Length: 141
Length: 111
Image 1 (cartoon, one colour):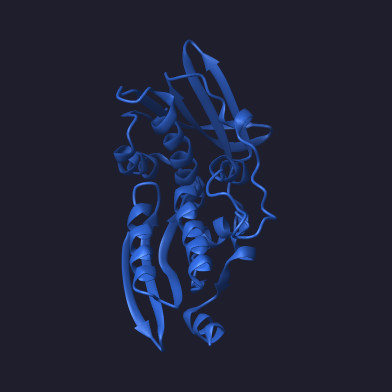
Image 2 (cartoon, rainbow over the protein chains, first blue to last red; image 1 turned 135 degrees about the vertical axis):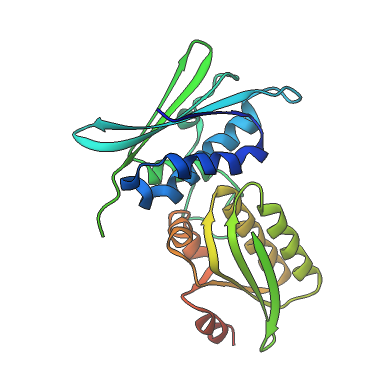
């Protein structure tokens, strides 16, 4: 299973994207941009909130193909050893009906993850936050 | 991410290519602020070369939308690639911002 350890810093995004590009299975290539999106949203959260300011934590990401719910899927995982945080439980859904003046800036990240993935899971194990998100095989065009 | 600006028919056109993410959105915000400071009254942001946008980029876009409303500047977007168009749609931005399929249409819509 391809795996990458990175210091929890924004400057690592480019290295992370290279890792994704090299390791995404061919059949899932049409989902690459969405995978990059989900990765950025999750890692920016970890980089910004998981570790106290001034300390440098790490994050671990991995990719694997699995058979789930009767379907071939791509599972992307992020693990960090920071403060417990379940992004899926604590993020309110944005109100998309508001006009430009009233729309709050932000609050879209988790909503976008939910929109482009099939399943999302969070667990806290052995002092680590563990997030799995699942991508379905992109439809043949 | 690469940003160039030009003026055509009295409209400021900002061409953006590459990726608008948490590491590049500041550059976009700064370029936008420059245009508003210079008093641009009509701006089209052309996204033909933009392949990727994240929520950080969308925050930059919404900030620009609000700044233009406040300044009385007319703002439009055009020529989106599939991923960027998807994110605008998912975020509900297509109903709060002016979006055109190409530059000609955007310029016509601003007259």
